[in-house]
Amino acid sequence: MSNFKKDQKVNVKGTKTEPLPRPGKFVKTHPGARGDFLEVLLDGSTQSQRFRPSQVTAA
Image 1 (cartoon, one colour):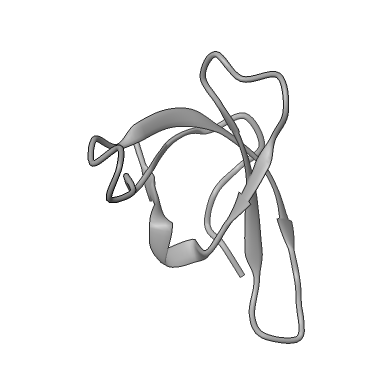
Image 2: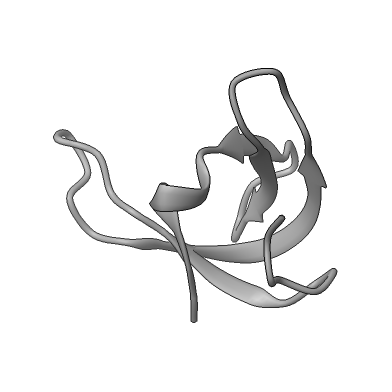
């Protein structure tokens, strides 16, 4: 279970192509068979994305 609250500001770990952390807002947790996914709406994006909890940190 994640400790984030709805609309809490979070940072998503960067990727190899974009190493900088990306800011966004936490939407909700999606429990899954292989662990939870956290839904995050990245700043400047209209579509939320799902990330593993290890990729998301509080801002």
